[in-house]
Length: 406
Image (cartoon, rainbow, N blue to C red; front, side, top):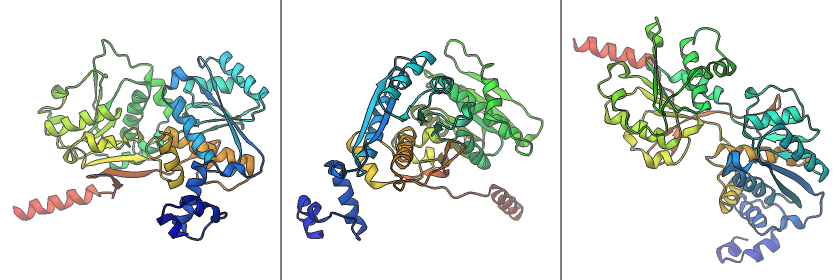
């Protein structure tokens, strides 16, 4: 079998590889080529039918990338399938209700719908009998007890909770002016202020978001002074056009040795981190959620800018065959969490329709996919596991060193 592969005789290899191989590497090549050549669909079995509900204007590139992620998964399984896209003009309830009715009349029972929060609420209000999987929304962002709607988005709140264990005072928060950025900033503030009290909810943060207004696309600075020295917080909301942070960072004694929490897209994050180094902020560490788990971070920043950065990541399960198949279709499930969440959803639906084993063991609880969270550091050329640093011990060591020298 290996000789066939070594000599490029892939069809001779596949002709004899008609069942799972004991050699893991050879079996992976077998499955990958079966999916690429679409040989698996020749196996007679019940047809798998999945509809895609796509608001192109709202989700942009994800209209095609989530479709490709779903297609890539189905290509690797030994079942004929139908994957049909339904384009909608907007996410209004009437439009959603019309599309779901059409999908049901076409004989589909499962739908993957990468929607915004507005679209998710419209699906809830529509009350359809279809089974709808929404990879872009977490169940904490909506209110429903419908057993037919499953949510697949990652849990930013859980990521913040884990990251905040690495934070020290003062906490400096950089966020953009998007709804997500503002919500995260407010939640991080509350978590940091009340680490020993009852933690707030994302709903608490959402209520406060409405009170934040921005004018002329200029950043707004909010300084939060807390009586307890251990919980000082400074927040910066920066607009998309801001490129220079000198007035906030240069010779600013309030932020020396601070923890910086960054809630901005990757390009803006790279700009912030490079200027932290430029203006000698001497950050204790830099924290960020899934938004900055991106290989661009490694090429956009110097290692000295990111050496003390910690990033939360919920894309913790990799499947080489699916990764390669997605890559052939121009879809990324290694770093792009929406495409990853879509793949998890297709895997779940495929299991429901065929009773075949799932490829991923992501659990479903309260109609929400439950992802593990790992903390990573952007190293020289890749993301590596983060090893927790006990800063209390470091402070004690510094104090002992200082006393010894005296």
